[in-house]
Length: 111
Length: 115
Image 1 (spheres, rainbow over the protein chains, first blue to last red):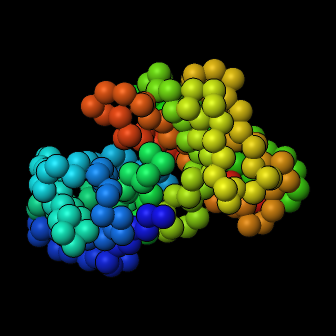
Image 2 (image 1 turned 30 degrees about the vertical axis):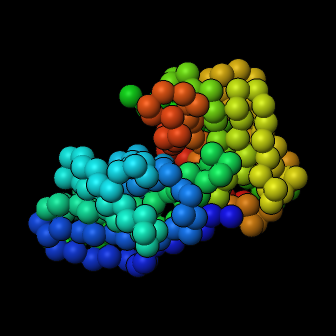
């Protein structure tokens, strides 16, 4: 089955810097990917998604990059703010049309 | 306004005492999910409903049951909670058609403590 991993459990960045959170997946046939943000005591919140026919998608201050060759996904957050502090999960749509979640990266923003 | 609403936000139960968690949605989505999330871990899917069709994950213990009386509501019943069932329980919804299909929208969760 699908396995999804994140490269770092914790990422600490200075306020105003850019953040990059990485994710690797195992199934080369995966065609849909989502990033979620989960703040303490809350449910995961949808940030951005991307389909396999694209390699880049931009939202407000966020960019998702997809490299299908190496089965790697990244979330870039521009000008990181204290409100960006949270755990970030990547999720991959598996063969059963369910989402397989990666282990999560905790982003800490230093003032 | 919250679109997926879970009640209660915090639930304390005793070891072995049945407990029910509830979820409601205003999105009219046909798919509803229940996840278990332990601290700092990824959400783990317990089961989901496609409309009224119940789909259990292979490794979900029999202790966990679910009911979906209508499109808007879904319940998670834990028949005999053990200490290991203490966790955050997340409800999510999605739809099977349209551009936004497969995006799951989560509630705020119910944190269950077992004494």
